[in-house]
Amino acid sequence: MQEINRRFSILFFLMLLFIQGCSLKNPNQVENKQQNKSLSELAQQAGLDLPAASIRAKRNFAQTNDSWQYLISLFAIPEVDDALIQKQLDWYLARPEYIATIQTRAQPYLYNIIKQIEEKGLPGEFALLPAVESGFKAHAYSRARASGLWQFIPSTGRLYGLDQNWWYDGRRDVYASTDAATSYLKKLGGIFNNDWLLALASYNAGMGTVGRAVKRNASQNKASDFWSLKLPKETRNYVPRLLALAKIFAHADHYGISLKTQTHEPAFMAINIGSQLELAKAAQLSNTTVKQLLHLNPGLSRGYTPPKGPHRLLIPIANAELFKKNLAALPVAQRVQWQTHQIKPGENLWAIARHYKTHIRSIREVNHLTNNNIRAGAQLLIPVPRSQGTQASFTQATAKMPIYNKSSYTVKSGDSLWGIARKLGLHSKDIAQWNQIGLNTTLALGQTLVIKQHAMHQCSH
Image (cartoon, rainbow, N blue to C red; front, side, top):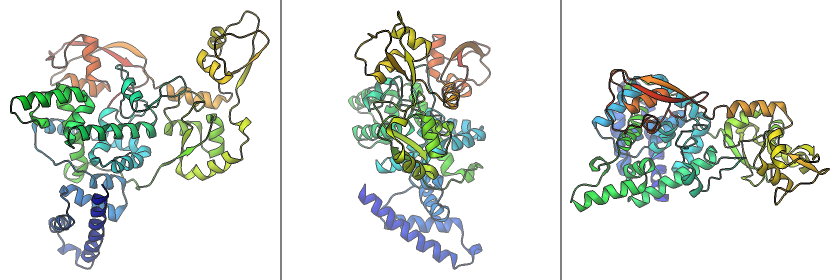
């Protein structure tokens, strides 16, 4: 990786000289094709085999310092022509508003995602994976219990260190989940000898499914690349979906797609807060709002950071130094301000937790109780935010969690299970399960499908 970075630095320097030289010529005499050819030659001199789009983007980034151009410059998966990619390409191009939406949603998270992708030596295309998985919605949640930008299921999330408890869900933590997802993808790449399409397929279908398909082909003396494997239909579409999206970003001008300009700099700073902190207090210390903090810290499930950690808050970059200064001056006793409850005769923890709409485990945790035994007359600290603003903002944010209401969808001409799922912001596996059909089932025109739609939030795309 250090060698690659060294070569990129050489290439970047050569491009600056190249651009400077071009600026001395009559611009009307410099054709884009000539520039791209020259840049390709520079890349070869630097020992790199980069896609032409990556080389163009490197030049554009030198001129604009734009995050999207920088990301495209990291693209490394060779483009291929395939009917499945074209099908996905057509779907995206018919919905340019969706391309605009995912760019807007990605804005606060993009720099950190690119940084972690680059640090782990992954293809830049993988930074677009949250668009495929969740539509870049940090609160995305599927009925299969996958959650967050990267759609971790509970077991895989725990395997990669993403805690899930009453206070916090690390799968929704945009900082921790990005680290976990990129670590997982790097591991998959290692397992499949840096065949990134197989790594991507494994992220969707599981390494066991892909590994068995590879072994099956090898035993029959068949090619074992992604395009040659027999994989589930969802996975067969999943990989082309990302490749199609990357192709659109790489050739946005060609497809008439507008890429938003975004300065390539951090949108937030991850700050170690040391111990538990009420969000209303954090907003006050950082001169922000609870709503802003929840947007950057969607892993928080209550009005407080978790008592046992992670003791980290993402703070808007412009407010980070102010927050650190004010937090250092804040007395420890003022970090959290619990409500107090005096235990009445006959009361138990279950009744008290229900009254305050909280959880027995949380009351025990903040009061250091080893069991459910309490005595009348004693006082309990209750983990409920005092600030109405905190509660209102948190309620608004968590209202995005799924509430399933049964409805229906009538199959139209050209519909597929996957297309319907994308249209409704759901997962095709969920729709198949609700209707007790297979993912490969051919849908009939006019057929009615049961849809358990989210009342306040659509989980994907």
